[in-house]
Length: 292
Image 1 (cartoon, helix red, strand yellow):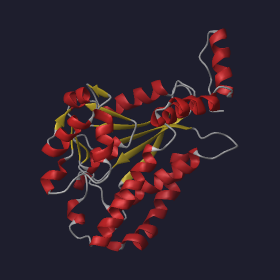
Image 2 (image 1 turned 120 degrees about the vertical axis):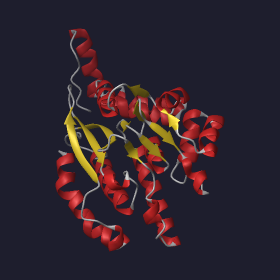
Image 3 (image 1 turned 90 degrees about the horizontal axis):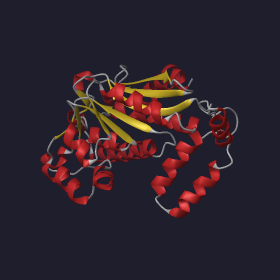
């Protein structure tokens, strides 16, 4: 199971690589990104990434980024394997161990110590990591309780869906710090909610409450209880569909063209899952998808 392997192997290997790449001053032995998995009711598993820097409100440090990137790289490799048994991981949820904060953005205390070269390196690695999350072939969901600000919201924008609790507040306050969003906020947000609304959020730097985030289109769901429960429910519902079809649907919508739709449709129309769905319909039962 990939989550078990990552917990026992990948995150242990973070320490020497982080020290080598970023220097000891950017690394602590305490893990800040925890990986687990949960069984789906139908088949397969959901990988759950839990952000865990309570003293820093889950601020994105070099160590945070390295651990997150290591997981995403291995998950991407696992999902892109050809031949053999398909990966059991059907969806990804990113959540927080804190009830009042998802992620407060960049670690400004650490950022203040950066050289210009370290700042550039950090931004390159952050952007490429979020790009990898965006390009995963499985559905990805951010479960947001409390604050998701700056880089925290940009992390959430790199996932396919955002489920917010009623207490959630999201925003891009970078202009208050005399900078602009640098990890996808200025291009992912307008694609999601439109130019004028994105301009409002970015230029005012204001905190947007959950209900308004839903109205704007930043949030896909606002739930009464914990966002993680809402994200689990959403993942379960999505994963009732065929894995190949879900992946193809992501690619088709991202490509947003008739030609691309035909390309991805041709990849699934003769799949085993497609014929299993037809058999299940005829036999009046739920399909048993295998991702083949």
